Length: 299
Image 1 (cartoon, one colour):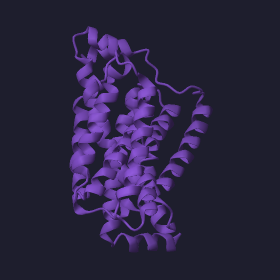
Image 2 (cartoon, one colour; image 1 turned 60 degrees about the horizontal axis):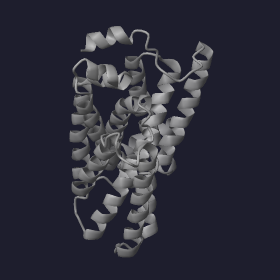
Image 3 (spheres, rainbow, N blue to C red; image 1 turned 90 degrees about the vertical axis):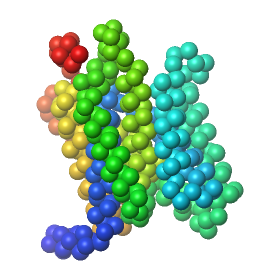
Image 4 (cartoon, helix red, strand yellow; image 1 turned 180 degrees about the vertical axis):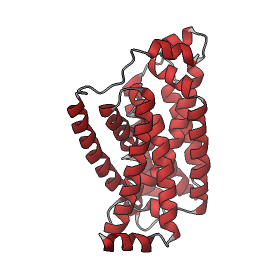
C-alpha cells in the first residue's frame, strides 16, 4: 500500500496526470447531473446516439485537417441533439428508430471516411482510442483542458440556476406546460447541455462508453435514495469518485481509462444494489408522493 501511494505521488508530478484528473472530475460531475434527468425521461440511450454523431463529425474534422476539431464536433452534435429531442411528434420516423438510424449511420460513415481519407499511419489505433478513450485523456492539450473547464462551469451553472424547472419538466412535462411554463424551451436547454457533455466525455471514456457515465451513477443512487435531490447529489459523488479511481488505476496498472472507469461503475452499482436490497428498496425509481407540493413550490 505504501508503494502504491508513493507511485501515485510520483505520477502527480506530471502535468498530464493533473490535467486528466481535472477534466475527468468535471466531466463526471456534469454527466451525473444530467444523467438523472435523462434516465427518468427514458432518454439514457441518447448518449450513444450523440457520441456516434460526434465520432462522425470528428472523422470529417480530422480528414479536412482542422487543428481544433471541437469547432466542428460541438455544433454538429448540438444540432443532432436538438433534432432528436425537439424534432416534434409529427415526424414520420420517431423515437428509437430515428436514434438508431442516426447512431449507426454516423458511426458507419465516420469510420468509412477515416478509413479512406485519413493520412494517419495508424488508423486502427486512432479509431480504437476514439471509441474507447484508451489514451486520449492522458494527451490533452491546454485548449482541451480550458474548453472542458469553461463548458463544465456553464453546464453546472445552468443546472443549478434552472434546477426547479428541470425538476418539473423531468417529472411532469404536461403539468409544467399547463402552468404556463414553456417546457419545450427547457427541453431544448437539456438537449444542448447533453450534447456538450457527450462531446466532452469522448475524451474520458470514448464514444462507445459514454452512456456508462450517464446511466450507472444515476441508477446506483436510485437503488438507495428516493428523492430527486438526494439521487442527484449521490449520483454526482459516485460519478466523481469512480472517475478519479478509474483514472488513477489506469495510470498505475496501464489499463484503458474508459474501460477501467466503466468497470468501477459496475462494481459500485452492484454494491448499491445490495445496499438497496438490505434497505428494502426493490425498485428503481424516485418517490413522487410530494411532487404536487414540490411542483407548486417550484413554479
